[in-house]
Length: 152
Image (cartoon, rainbow, N blue to C red):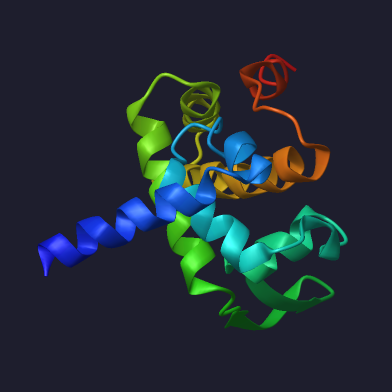
């Protein structure tokens, strides 16, 4: 079974080398060849999302709350795409282990008094937004975009 898994991974890597989208997505901290292939296979066209918030919802990274006059009338979990949610959460874990701009963003949120879970979820949403932006604009990831806004 392990041999079949290794062959499957080799096939994914072989067929994904020709896609420029995967090359751009791999520049994001925490996203490798397999994760980039999963993103491109699930999203297909990044321009189908009006904004990053619709993409968050599609990835299952947000909750839906009904609020009127400050009173909450219920909260629903948005199911979203479980594969993309898993990719973003795994990339978040990998990014927090490194020393990238995403780790600095996490540390900045923690210094503001935000809990670990909320800061981690914010990093995962940031990774989703970056992956959408990088793919749409066909450009490489740049740490300066994240770290430049932290001092404000």
